[in-house]
Image 1 (cartoon, helix red, strand yellow):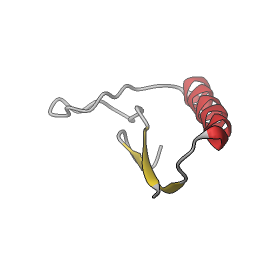
Image 2 (image 1 turned 180 degrees about the horizontal axis):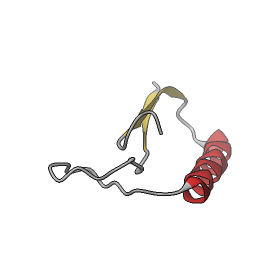
Image 3 (image 1 turned 90 degrees about the horizontal axis):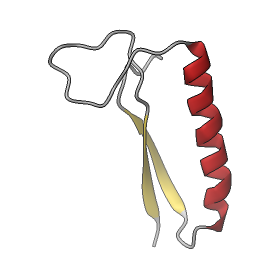
Image 4 (image 1 turned 180 degrees about the vertical axis):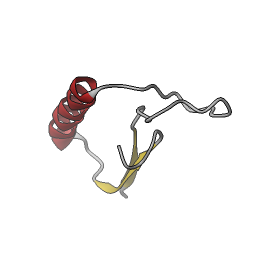
Length: 64
């Protein structure tokens, strides 16, 4: 058995009035802190008992 992992990236270049996602406009420093936190969480995932077969990055503006 394997698991899938969804990582929500909450940054957009602008917040659209119709969007229902949890998003925000953020500068490079805040985006870097998110990347650093995700790397730390991935390191911690080594101890999970179920292997991750798929990682999906979603939310926000994909190009950011």
